[in-house]
Image (cartoon, rainbow over all chains, first blue to last red; front, side, top):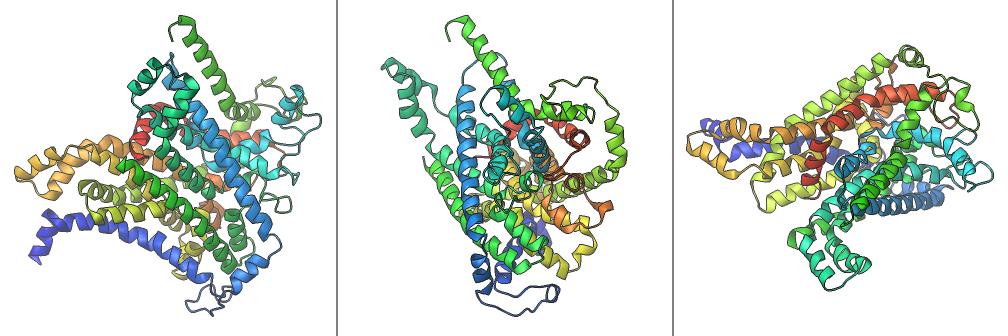
Length: 300
Length: 275
C-alpha cells in the first residue's frame, strides 16, 4: 500500500494517474458513445426501447431503410458538394492571403491577426449574420450585386433550391478562411529564405519560384490543412439551422444535419445512428490522410 | 521592395481586403442600430439614418438574455474547468516521454478530435437518458462538450510543455523534490501562459456551443445563449435589427477578448496546431 502511494507521488504511478484520468474520461464520453452508436445502428430503437438496455437486433434493416429513403442520394451529393466547394474556397483564399501576408509592409502582422476574427465566433452567430446578408428581398449582398450590374433580379439564396446549399457554403468559407490562412502562414514561414534568394540569383521568376520551391516545400502542410479542412467541414453543423434549416425540400441538407434531424426531429434514433456511422467512414478517410501527412512532416 | 511607395500600396491593399472580410461584423452592428423600417430600405443604407440604441436594452429584457448568457457562462466555465483539470496532466505526460505507447495515446486523441459533435450527439443523448443524466441537463452538456474540447486542448498544451526545458525539472528532482512537487512548483508555472491561452480558447469555443445544448436541454431557463438565438432565427426571420442586437451582445465580449489577446492566441496556435 505504501509502495503504491509513493509510486503515485514520485514514480511512474504519477504519470499513469495523470494520463489515466484523462483517458478514462475520454473513453467514457467519446470512445464508448462511438461504439454505442455502431451498436444502435443494428438495433431497433424507438420510444418504447429508448430507455432499456436490451433492444431487439434488426441486422442491416436500418441501413436498408436509410439508403432507400428518397432523399438519400440528394443528401450524399449535397455532402460532397458542400465539402469540396467549402474546402476549395477556404484553401484557395486562405493560401492567397497567407502568400500576400508574407510580404513585409507596415501593420502587416496586425492586419493579418484581424483575419482570425471569424474563427472565434460561434457558428450559430456567423450563420445568423450571413442569413441576414443573404436574405432574398432585403439582403445586402443582392443589393451590392445589383448595383454592380452582376445580377438583374434578386437571387433568393435561402429559398431557391438551386442555390440554397451555396448560401451555406459561402458562410462556411468565410468561417474557415482564418484557420486555413493561419496554418498555411506557419508553413510558409518555415521555408528557408535563402532558397528563394538562390533561385532568384539563378534567374527564376516569381511563378517559377512558387511552383518549384513554395509548393514542394509546403507539401506536408498542405496535406494537413486539406485533411483538417475536410474534418472541419464534416463537423460544421451550426450554419445549417441558422441559414436554411436544410431546406427547401432538403436541397441544402448534408449528412451531419440529416443525422441530427433523424434523431431529434423525427425521434428515429436508430436511423440517426445509422447515418452517423456512414459519415464516420468519411471522417475515417480524412483522419488517415491527416495522420499520414503529419507523419511525413516528422520524417522530412 | 526597393521602392518606398510599394509598401504603402501593399498596406492599402491589405486594408481593402480586411474591410471586405470584416464587412459581416460591420453589418451586424449597423443593422442592430437601424429602425424597423430602415432595415427594409431598398437600396440599403450603409450607415443608420438615426442610430437607435434603445433596441439593446429592449432585446436584453425581452429575450431574457441575462438568463441565457449566465447559462452560457456556466457551461463554458464547467467545460474549461474539466478540460484544464484533466487535460493538463495528460498533455504533460505525453510531452515528457517518447515511445510507442505515447504515440498510441497521441494517435487515439487525434482520432477523438476528429469525431463530429453531430454524430456523437445521438449516442450521448440515448446513453445519458439511460443513466439518468438528462435530469441535470447543463451538467450533461458540460460532460459532453468537455470530451469534445479536450483533444484539441491536449494537443496544444503538449506543445507548450515540449518547450519547457527538461533540465529544470531534472534539477528539481536532484534537489530532492518529488515528481508531484516538481510538477507543481517548476513545470506548471513555466507552462502557465500557454495553458492560460488554451484555457481561454476552450472557454470561447464552449461559450458558443450549440448542438449538445439544443439536443439535451429542454428547459428554457437552463438553455445557453446559442439556443436562445436559434429560437428566433430561421429562414423566415423578419425582425433583423433585434436579432443583430442579440448577436452583437453575444459576441462582443468574445471579440474583445480575442482582440486583446490576439498575439498570444496566434502564437499559441501556431506552435501547437501542426505538431
